[in-house]
Image 1 (cartoon, rainbow, N blue to C red):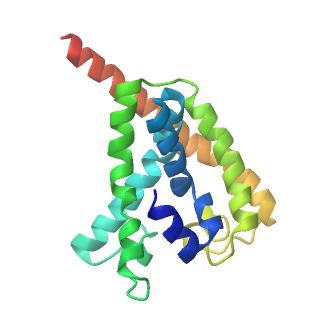
Image 2: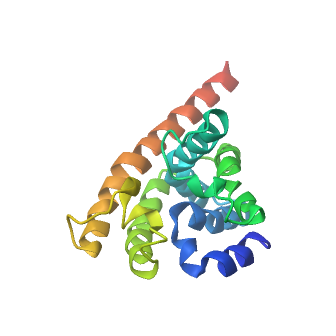
Length: 188
C-alpha cells in the first residue's frame, strides 16, 4: 500500500481508487489490521467474481494472445509503464488473501450488506468523479459499449441492485458453502 497508493494517485488520479477492486484494498488493509470478519467478508463477496474475471482475462491473454472477456487490455499496453502495470497484479492475489482471512476470522453474514452499501456509494461516486475515459466500474461504457439508454446517474443507481444481485449475493452464497464444506472436512 505504501507504494501502490502514491503511484496510483500520481499516475491515475485519486478517482481511480473508486474502482470497486481498488477500494477493496483499503478495506482489506483495515480487515487485516483489525481482524474484522465483517470487513474481510464484505470485500471477499464484493470482489470475488470481479477479480476472478480479471484473472481469467489476464491469464487468457497470456495463454492465447486474445482477451476472452476484456478489461485487462491496459496490462498489455506498452504505453503504460511496466511498473504501473505490475502494481495491478494485486488482482491475482486479493482473492486468495481474502479467502485465507475469512477462513481465519470467520464469515460475517452482514458482509454482503456492507458491500451493498459500498457499491451504492462507489458506482455513482465513480461515475460523477471519474472521467469517461476512466470508465470507473464501467459506468460510462459497460463491457466497452457506450451507455446511452439512461442518464448517467440513473444508470449508476439502476446498476446498484444489479451488481448486488449478480455479483455480491452469489459470491456470499458461494463463500458460505465453501466455509461449511471446510468445517465438515475438518470435523470428519
